[in-house]
Amino acid sequence: MRKRTRIFLLLSVTIAILDGVFVLMNNAFTTDALHENLHTEGRRLHSSFDTLLAQTYTNMLTMATFISHDKEVQSLFLAGKKAVEIEGGGAGGPRADAVRKRLFDQVGPNWKEVQKDLQVRQLHFHLGPGSTSFLRVHRPDKFGDNMDNVRFTIVDTNAEQQPRVGFETGRVYSGLRGVVPVSTWDPDVDKMVHVGALEVGTSFSVMLDILDQRNDVGAGIFLTMDHVTKAMWPDFVKQRFGVALDGCDCVLEASTRDGIDNILNKMFEEGIRIQNHGTEIIHLDDTSSVRLETCSNLKEKYL
Image: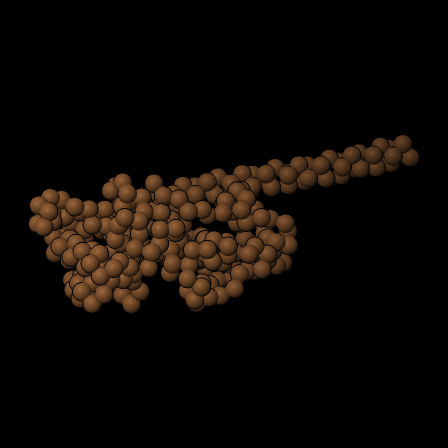
């Protein structure tokens, strides 16, 4: 009887151990499958982001090209360039101001409708060579500043007279840019002349909102504080971003949902760097968690 009892106990312990091993293995397999599924979903979202970004660039280039081929716009832009040259460069003087007002009156009303319907943000005429602001249609009180050291898309478009797209930070905004060269016939010299560049710009906010609506996933873009302070006017840095976020010395350029500060704080607590690629699961409290697809820090680039 005792022998049967020992055998029964031994079998019971063995079964319990096997059950425990099975549970541990099942949990391990389940966890691995979860991480693999999240990683696959992260790659899919990354691909969706890249596709939407390419579409956004194409739309901005199309819009800039359409506006730049308007004969009246070309004529006024050329007149503005000549006025600035006569009046000493930079912002020019009263003659340049008069042309600037006429150009704004030509494109301003329609641009307000475009901003409302298509959610683009900037329309900017730059004089070449380099990048000197002639007219910010979205901010007509700011003009005449030279941006050769920050607006490389403009500098290279004026130098090579080829369209360009990319992300770049200017004096006032960071954003996605579509830039085209503007040339027109100059009757004074009886030939085509290059006048400058026309830029259409939008923000990541518009694009991320579309991504969120299509995929039901929150998204955010961060820039380093060092980057924005080197490029932007100080008053606009303070107005746009305030102070840097703790733990990353970065600022939030755009996001689709609230609570991103909590996510960042939890990341820093767990030693997750925002610059890293990959997928992480972060538990914010006892009942909720968030899947985070981290990406490398955004750098200015253009094509």
